[in-house]
Amino acid sequence: MDPTWVQYYDAFYSFKNYAKESQDLIQLIQPHLQSDGKRWLDVACGTGKHIEWLAREFTCTGLDLEDGLLAAARQRNPGLTFHQGDMRTFSLPERFDVVSCLFSAIGHMLTQEDLETAVANMARHLLPGGVLAVEPWFRPADWHPGRPHMITAELGDVKLVRANTSLPPVNERITVLDFHYLIATPQETQYHREALELRLTEEAEMRAAFEKAGLQTTYEPQGITGRGLWLGRKPQ
Ligand SMILES: C[S@@+](CC[C@H](N)C(=O)[O-])C[C@H]1O[C@@H](n2cnc3c(N)ncnc32)[C@H](O)[C@@H]1O
Image 1: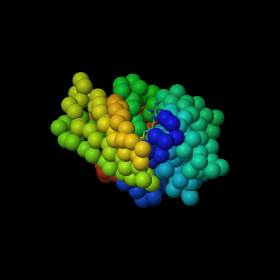
Image 2 (image 1 turned 180 degrees about the horizontal axis):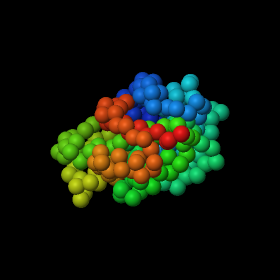
Image 3 (image 1 turned 90 degrees about the vertical axis):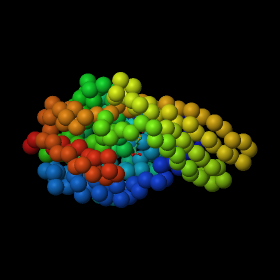
């Protein structure tokens, strides 16, 4: 993703309150945490907006698939370490008190096997007593096709629109987010289209992934944004 698009990406998500989400997340995790350190790994960290706030209380590291997003994360959080990697396969030498995967990034796992591989890999990076926190994509029953959505944003004198319609999921499981973008700059208005695939996941499937990874598992139905939050503690 080029730097201009990374700026647009942040502008589209400017409705999110990363400061409050981070505070709420720490509060939800704290009662489960039994390791005594302060090391936090945010997987699929995007442009590092949760880390910006989490780093006030924890020593944070970030990881993401996209180099362009990581460049913005590094700029936002000077002095912190960011790695490029896939949540299924990354391998770091350190272990962490908390590993998080937020804003439904786990939905990029398009099969149950990939979901279980990613959860097991993130759990492997926990210290004994540490906690994995995953904010899921929707459950099949919570997906309502036929709803139009629109986000508008501004970045200096550039006006941004992102519109899409919730479509029936492919094979009842894969939601295709068919995003249509209009970018109005002082020179011209550009049109872009992007399709993102995310897998709807049953609670039992997410629980199975956590339990197979050996985690003591809890589900918080509200979570930090209303999408729920899975918490799993690695036994001591
Ligand atoms: C909706 S964004 C969430 C970003 C960030 N957590 C936030 O809350 O702003 C989803 C992120 O998942 C990342 N991602 C997608 N597939 C991934 C994978 N297989 N491994 C690691 N990151 C991935 C994307 O690059 C993107 O940064």
